[in-house]
Image (cartoon, rainbow, N blue to C red; front, top):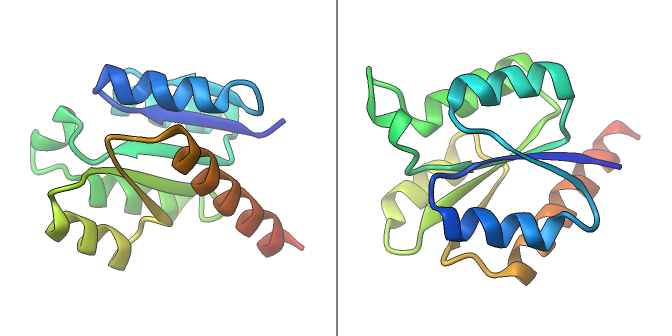
Length: 129
């Protein structure tokens, strides 16, 4: 069973994603960036759902893009889906041009979450074969 890790501070979207995915995948919640990196190393997930507005990215010059680049540098096959607010089109454009494999827009819809996750995991499987 594929493992997915979610880092999302917005409780409602976190729970919507968890409930949409938990019957088909092993889903775990990371509390912060350090926990996320530790979980990636130990749990070997196939996909990360990453909140672009996570407050930890606003400290010490961190950004969601730097975190994604750091993840991709170490774990090149790991898929990263960035969660963005619908009204932040500049961040959306940057996320899709830089390192993110896909984007989910808030408010998250369970069907969109499932669709995006299935797409990314099937792309990952095709890349391996």
